[in-house]
Length: 341
Image (tube, rainbow, N blue to C red):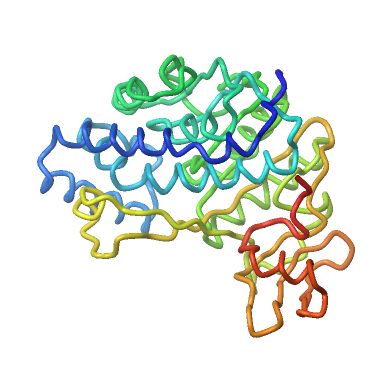
């Protein structure tokens, strides 16, 4: 791994990649009739709600891949980037040069990681669908980042036979839900074996968080150190029957994005759950903000996951001066207190 540039925040505000991804999607989706894309999106929505048939590849045709990219890629990119950004904030010395994206689909995590870490040089995307690989490679060819443009795309099945990926950064986003529970455990264990940092992202639903919680337990039992979002390696204090750990990121919808999703709002909120674990310990958050801060005149109340007290509510009043001013600016999902610059 190399070292980060003098101003790591520059890597966290990479609007060029996001704009390039939107432009590449617009051009690639323009090859298909909107009505056909919309029908395929509705089929995908039904599959997400009712569950996927694991015996049939979800992205088995060119139009299905295009519909998936238009429907899910902006949200997946935003969620993965948000998770990776938290890792970068807590581990400013982590500067990966190599990445393996397991079950990479059309490459959302590839784009997201390059937006956070410009140190990336060699990236490999493992994906079983040839149509997804072709579409993702075509999108990547329009990227301003060399790591994205020159990524290696390999056809590979995410199952028990998949070899352990070796890289500074291994990502798995929105993959575990398509695997049986037994295979999930083996794939997570394999992915963690030779990764300096493993980041897993799943939908921010109770089921998605249950998969993250299971992966987190396995990673901790394997001797890895949880980096984010948790402030500790111990058992999660959230009771599954009452709540689940998840976060949210807001993204703008393009005109085409709204049409293929048959939506009217100019934005959407993507909820996600994630865990990042490393073979070496990194500084981590003292606590994590689990809900939108409640902000009233002269008072901010934070719902926190803490290392010492489990779940706790903290009130920050105006009398606390600079701490109060900082609390006014934090958002759901941030570390508390924020990492020092």
